Amino acid sequence: MNANKSGSARTLKSDLKRVDAHKTKAGEYTELPELTDAMLERGTVKRAGRPVATNPRRQVTIRLPEDVLAAWKATGPGWQTRMAELLSKRAL
Image (cartoon, rainbow, N blue to C red; front, top):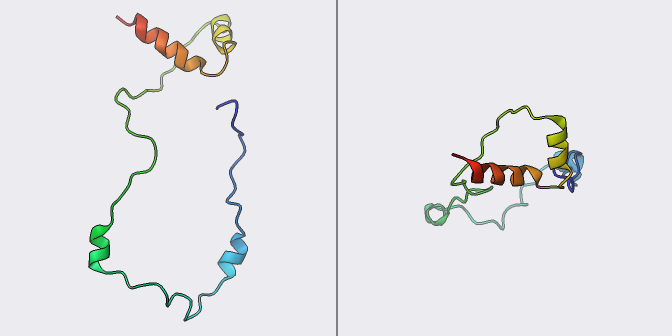
């Protein structure tokens, strides 16, 4: 987990009880136009999230001596990325 981010769960900051209790009345949505085939054809689907990586990461388990791990962690946030970069440079 990133040191700058909170580990607590996010909240919606919404009054869900009030939203759930709302009953839709007949005239509430009269100002909305009917959805037509032409409208649907103009629509596009946008994928959310990060783009697909060209060199995706894969989770592995490796056993390292405590002092080695402590030394890397002591270098601060991003130590795993720096370790991966060093290993990539030394790869056969």
